[in-house]
Image (cartoon, rainbow, N blue to C red):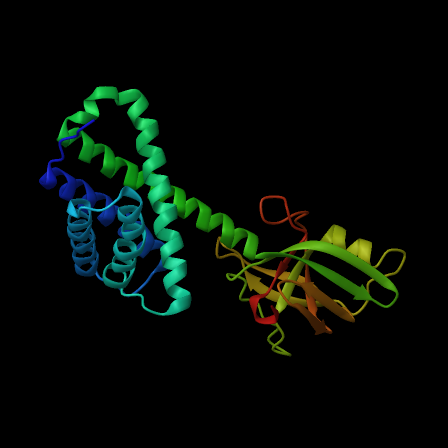
Length: 263
């Protein structure tokens, strides 16, 4: 069976797809590559693909060349990444963006059918797939950040131990003006659990501003120690905890807000 290949169409399709994949990877990596680098990288990838497809060689040799020469050129030229660790990360992102684009276009093909044979509709679908894939990557990145900023904390006060779910809030900039210590926030329920059967003493009150710019005061206590269970465990001696009337934080999943300076 013989096929007719229009090399100009093949080049244009590869250029558009390489360009979109590079844009997604560039956005995810936040690398120093410019828009011009992406265009040159996509052009080079499409041009080399045309050369490889015209070489009189077996299909598997052409496939190997596509996955080595072309993809290496895309990463090095289009993303300006040459370091070994960054190179393989960028290469993985390129494949991931390619799978996302291909999957979305296959899904759209079910509804558009033969209309994709019209070139303008094909490229419009490719651009739409880019926006959908880009939003998917943003969603995956937000999930990763959310997972990264959550941990568990063990609070210790004398012989009482309380383990809670916590969220690291980069927006928590509350410090004790007297000691300069960062202030972590726990719920009133957690404080009662930690001091169960014992009266809470040595409560200090620290002024703070709410999101609505209203000034209020926060009751604070100092406990013996707390252990933050993150990628590496960290012990904080005599942490300062502010007691909030709110029962849960972080969309109802955490009982404590950690100050980033102690994490």
